Image (cartoon, rainbow over all chains, first blue to last red; front, side, top):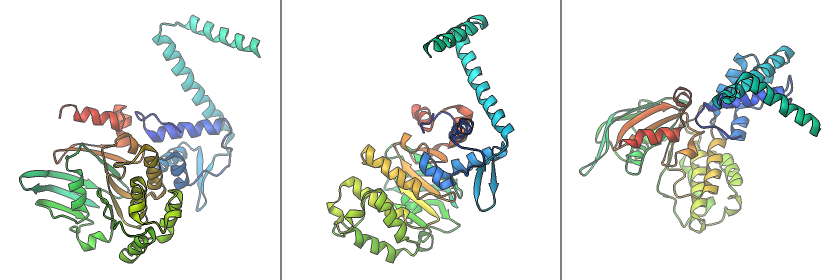
Length: 123
Length: 232
């Protein structure tokens, strides 16, 4: 995983894991890797992973079974919410970037429409 | 764990450390970053119990550096001190005799991942510089110590070997590891350290929690380094 060193590493990992939850790379009820395994894979300090797991649990996206480790939530509502959160964030980023180059609301919608209908044609 | 108070170390007329203050707690992995001659290695050598302080104090779990504290401290020196005529097996046996907390099994596993396991009967002097450094790191990290002091673990190592050394470092870390790492290769240890201390001319120029630095100022350890040293 490539990191942006100007942003907290643990947040980048949290966001990446949320993406993996939403796109089905990690399934509901699946066991998460141990802190040490995960820190080896991502090549970051184990303390960072500990913080990631704390954050995920705080947001109720994972839960701990005593002595067995961390598991992905089985609550379907949470997946729907996560998907919505990520989509919200991406849309906000997109709108902000478009406004930086002076694109107003109507133009923006037209851009999206045009792109989508072009893609449909290519399909 | 480590408490450094008003520490001064003078060599002849030069002050290598000048009223240096720092406290390192358990689970912290502290990167000490600074240019050559900033006092990094002197600090490490004092903590390892190799040289005495001139003024002030440095304690490890309330002990002055000495034989008692050394039992809890695993130190990688900047200069290679392994006898060159010894084979890798000799060195391993020496470590396991000398250090009660030396874990042979872990050492052999690290050698395997560092692709040094076929060199067990090779004399140290026949190994390349990068291989010697890998061997030294594997020895240091195979001790089950409370604190690890790593002085320039990446010094003079090519980028590929550097990556292997960093992997070994992460492999041997756990959530309780306490470490102090000195380096002038800032970006390489960006994801390994939890705290960064910038030093120059034997004094602390800046001291930051890494994630807090990224969160509050939106800068990397490397960018902060440039900012801190800009006016020096």
